Length: 139
Length: 485
Image: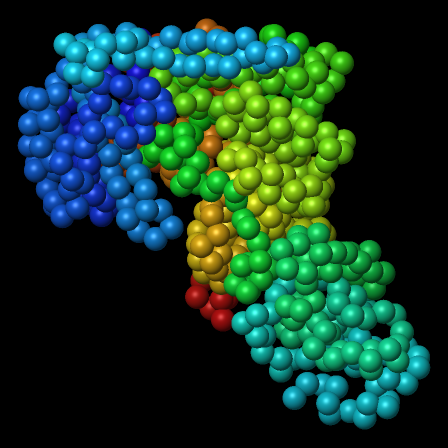
């Protein structure tokens, strides 16, 4: 399967040139750029691990791309996403978030059903990858 | 000094009938207080009726007056409670009608009650005989009054955080045919659309609990579809379960059931009424539920410029009443919507402070005092080929709802959904890269369709579909500096 979280997951994987343009867009909007990675892509996994702190003061996308290259060197077998964070009043949250790195194989999710009272079903989404311990899931 | 103080109070309160303007409802020198509610009405008086007297009558009938003098006014601080028409000016290009500005003291209104606010402002006056027609164009709601409302239970930012979707419009589709599908078949449409790439599907306004599909059946099949789609995409999905019903008790029962089976969103129709909407908003706030409002019925009173209530006023009331989504027009789709006027509606939903913009029909500066933002929904006759126009008109914080434009795809619902999602992502990517999407839009779509067959098919089928009709509700003002004075 292809995980379709993030803003551009229905397009072919972005090239570094395309990623640079999106990062520069974030910077030009005054947003802080953040790099995060995970090997637990559950849709409710809000807190991916941060690759350092959000880059609040960076002015050039090249700096972010350097960090992305370093992150890929260590965690290239995992999901990596880039997000733009807007600290302005009334928003104070993420403005853009897109995946820039994927594992070679994305095994997807199982849907477990627990039949309950009436015709209710309790659903649980479980990532096949997380059946293995953290760090061993995609390598 | 107001008009009353200058006259002998004995004359003013002598039994009998007198002109509204002589009873204190016309005060041309009045300067509205920061805490006043101000309404601007478009008044069309009967032939021979003085527009100032008509404005004073509207002020009177929407506040303290009745047709005759009553001595019991003197038991009250009646000068305070009287609404004050203070400005009457001709409507540009419309010799029969005038804009009348009327100020109301905040003490006239119950805190946090749209029902009370509207019972005053639109309660009696619209049937008043000396007027041919009357339209409420806009209202300035003072911060002091805005702060008595809870506003949207979720709001745009928190909804995005819950859904984990940023940087692009959300995509939805209304299940079609809107009537007749069984619960099982209905859920099939939901599953295909969500799996194909939409974020939301939606019940239509008149899907409640009919012989062909009872509500529990629909809810259960829809949640199976939502959860399946989440598992195959790894993305949060939702479907607006319409809990509109005959009574509050029924609506609460349906909403509770939706919650118990894991839905993140429920929907209501505007026709349930302002009090029911506020009740459902409080319920949604207590239960972490996104609340979608379908504006069913609004065109009966919003569409004609001479009479009724402008949708911009309805949008303000609904943001105060507290809905997370509201249908606000598409401009390019099949339903009424002038671009400049529609922009005004979207701004009301999404801005924290909205300056006067007569060219968008916004008559007053309006602060929303950090009330959460309502996500506008564009729905009705839109398709992937218009993506550049839609993104340019509405920006990111909108739900683009493609019903026919998803389900009517020649290769099926899933292909239709994928076409819309690819078109959208390609357009956002291009915009962020600095490209001129309005002019290059068709090229951007064509390029994206080279790696997406469903998009190519969608563009082929709907390439010539447009709805170019003259709007009935366009702004009265053109953007020149002199008009705003």
